Image (cartoon, rainbow, N blue to C red):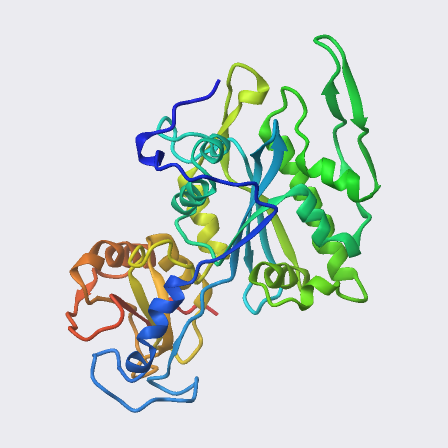
Length: 393
């Protein structure tokens, strides 16, 4: 049964059939870049200081680059119109070596009782509504957004076909009200281009959308693994395209495959099953795999300067994850004015960042944020890491 689309989504976008659409989302990085020349000259106190070029020296500052991320909207043509069949989120690991691929069913609902499933948003409003919904669900923006139908997807992997993986369920279609026909049998074997295209797009009658999302993940796993194992990288990876670069990053290292944390909500039939995202588990995952998020809109996340007061002996990644989980974004990494800081401090420079600063402080287990107004500050919060964050030996 089709649900009514909420009024906030009714600015209808006329969505043509997209074979392959690449959308660069770069305003967060642009916003940081505009302030770079001034900010690298500022010390934590806001005064002008010499630029430290040695990463091991006090007062060193460096701007961060957003973690490369991508959102793929998988589509298929049904009754002459594109329909959303699944969503894949991916993030590159630090150093562009491997990363994480997260599968998301097309009937995901972000907030229980308040949202329309993604596939209905896609049909009724357009792909941008789905992107906005995923930005809200994951709490970040995306470096790349791709609307990709099954045929365009297989055209990218032609060099790597056939792909060997496990198709765990038969693909079937209705012949009559009482009969079904198997169109592709379950098996573990190499699948050719036409078979991969079918597996990527076909949803069995009365089948929950999660099963199709799982099949799409099997294709991702096989393609990335086979590409990484290839003696000669396929020609598409010589293209200067962000989405293709991201696939190349994944193929360069170990990849973790996950499904979004969500609870099933039964409908009138298995095909009507929706999946309600678990906000806490989703944000925990994002904090783990996206240390430097892209903002969905400028100002969504207060900017944070993370300074090392230990001389490089603390573990940086847990602190980065804490900042992301609390709603912040580390825009500047560097060293404090000294390396014998005993207690971690959180300084808040802008009143509008007070809540996030308090959340960071609480999660780090330190005292309340210190108000430190700076009229010329390029960050809203500063975290100075002390010896209390150094793991016990």
